[in-house]
Image 1 (spheres, helix red, strand yellow):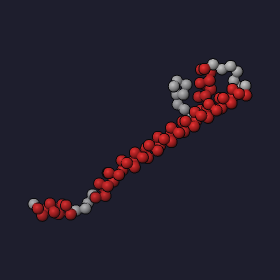
Image 2: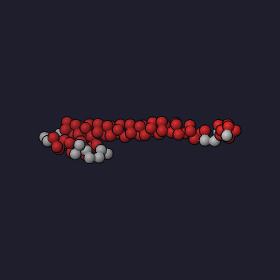
Image 3: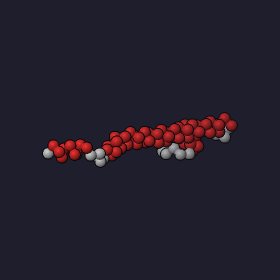
Image 4: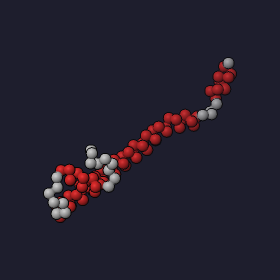
Length: 88
């Protein structure tokens, strides 16, 4: 019994698997959080662009006396990739 226990403890099969199981969730979490940060930054930049273009249209007089809903629709139209922009 003791001999088989010593033989079991000397075996190194699966040693790399343990390291992989310990480190993979950390690297995968960092990867997913960077993808999420990129998506949030993209949405932020596109919303800023929509506001910038809409304000430019207001200043040069292309939009004449818009209502609140008209401004929201115009910002969302100029933002390009924001899903459900008008409802939010």
